[in-house]
Amino acid sequence: MNAIEPATALPAIDQELKALGLRLTPQRSHILAVLKAAERPISAYDIYSQLKSTFPHISIDTVYRNLTMFTTIGVALQINLQNAASALFEYQGERHHHHAVCIRCGKNVCVEACPGVPEVKYPEGEQGFQVTGHAFELYGFCAECQRQGTYPARQRTDRGRKNGQ
Image 1 (cartoon, rainbow, N blue to C red):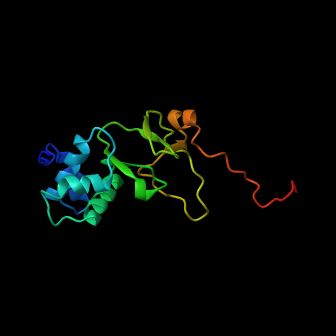
Image 2 (image 1 turned 180 degrees about the vertical axis):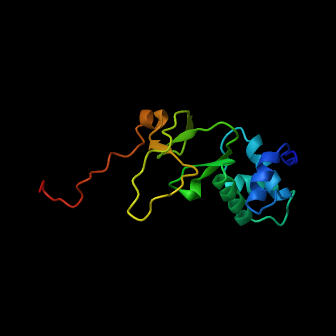
Image 3 (image 1 turned 120 degrees about the horizontal axis):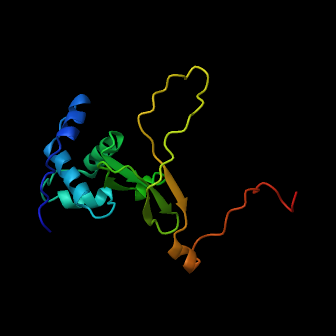
């Protein structure tokens, strides 16, 4: 495996981090480089595995903390929001998009449509909430799982009823 080169041309990200009182450390730069180089969304563990030779003392917690921070500031995107254990990450860049995730096999596909931020009615006393971002995912069954018939039957919503009552 080739050594990962630190991400370059990151002045905007560096400025965002400085505004938050943070620095673009060598570890953060390398995490971004792995995200940018990935051809598909990648797990935190895969990033950790790629960085271990360059940073022998890096921990998986450090990778997760940095991915969370990058997600918060909009540099990275987390896929599969419902299940942190199987979450994948990708470099967001300038391309705003969302994903559809198969709840059977975990496959994800990019969805270019964005519902935007809907007008939300907040409880009394909570007016003035400033939205700074959003996350949107669609969940269902991919075409392959549908073809194979490997998706579960739809769950009944009347679990508490017996004998049609």
